[in-house]
Amino acid sequence: MAGAAIAGSPIDGTPMGESAYPARAAAWYATFVLAMLYWLSVLDRFIVSLLVDPIKRDLGLTDMQFGMLHGIGFALTYAVFGLICGALADRYSRRWLVFAGVSVWSLATAALGVAQNFWQLLIARLGVGAGEAALNPCATSMITDLFPRERLTLAMAVYTLGATLGGGTAFMFGGALIDMISHVDFISVPIIGDVRSWQAVFLMVGLPGLVLALMVFTIPDPVRRGRRANNQSWRDTYGGLLKFMNARRRFFVCHYLGFGLASAIIAGCSTWYPAHLGRAFGWGAAQIGMSLGVTLIIAGFVGKIICGKAVDAMYQRGMRDAQLRWYAGALLIGTPIGIFATSSSDPYIFLAGIGTFLILIAPLPACANAALNLVTPNEMRGTGIALFSASGNLIGAGTGPVLIAGAAQYFFDGSNTAIGSGMGVVIAVIGPLCAVLLFLGLPAMRAAMADAERAQPVR
Image (cartoon, rainbow, N blue to C red; front, side, top):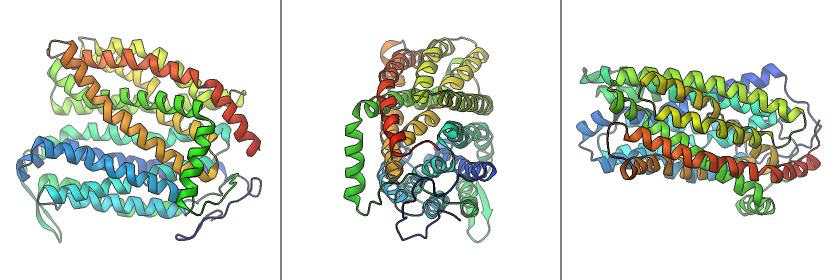
């Protein structure tokens, strides 16, 4: 395929204009394949959270040990290997890196299904984080080379629908999964033998990934458009990126903080939605899972498609800050809706309000990734996305759930509705702050886009 490179050799830069963009059908097919792998990534990542009680019971784990498995056991390797894979994506075949990443996380997920103690679980969980770290830097870099600038945000939105579907299906089938494993002690698996029911779940979701990984070879590793340098050393890779970011520090500060803090709202609320429905309204696991899953999938699909089309239309009309401008406006509109939803005493009003709120804020990764890749030179995009993902996970997943729990504990009376009130406080404080940060970054993004278009003229 054009632009593909063999694994183990740096990719040569291809000057702009040597090759046309792929046909639309080919570009969208590649995006679909990458989105499907993103769905698998999120499903494998979060399946462990659905199996807390049986794992703790059978292996005698403490809450602290399970917290290590679910938190730092994944996040640490995801961040470290993300930075490594980002640099590799800027210099080597992105298809081979995606294939390696999917294979590693799929094997590691399956390994959770044969683990017999905490340390074996931890090692497998570290493998899941390391493997999944390869996908986003490679996929977003490839998508940026598959689509012209004026169609990039919609393409990113479709790709990130994979995460929406992954989280939604995890919720939808989570309740049924819990019911199933609560009635079955052991399941017979060919070759392996009898395993506990929760171990069988890991095997069922992990092993198919080894087959799905092969689909990456049905898509091209596209021409790297506008590539200006071929970094051969790690020092050049990171040194060049930091120098580039420092020269445009207002844009990067506003982008990282604005989108990073907004991700704290998404990560925090997503963590506590199930608990709020259970505590405030007395719903069971199956009802919570199905209702939340359907809400997340519908809202995510509608929000991301609308956002992608609208932002691309704004870009075509000359708004070179369209990604930041759209999302800042969405936060201002969404904040009162989120506050209203989380304060509702009716579960169906809560779900409808949350669905509307998510239509507005769910497109965060599409806007953030598109803005970042439009500004960043081709030879730095993988590293740049990896650095943003690491910081976003640290700010979002690291602070969001804790902030909501803290607000519920310290500002409210510990009643059944305290978590909902805590979500409302976090939305009320962080939402407008993020919007202000993104609005402050608009002039800086326009300037950075002017630099990028001078370096790589619009076709």
